[in-house]
Length: 90
Image (cartoon, rainbow, N blue to C red; front, top):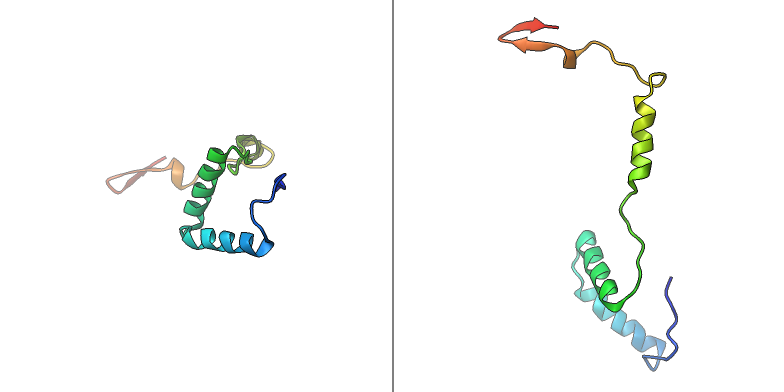
């Protein structure tokens, strides 16, 4: 979603490519740190960037699905047993 500027900042496409290569070279190698730097630069310039965080709404619907009684059920097992000094209590 790059916006074309109304004026030409560089005299040729090669000059723009050279500047982009220099900037890419100076970025950190870690993808997460690179993304954080890019987001900070974009916010300082005033560009709107979409959020990359997952929405909570989808996560809640998945949890609700697995909490349904017709999908999952609770069985007696390891989590329901308590062990006190080698004696099991259920």
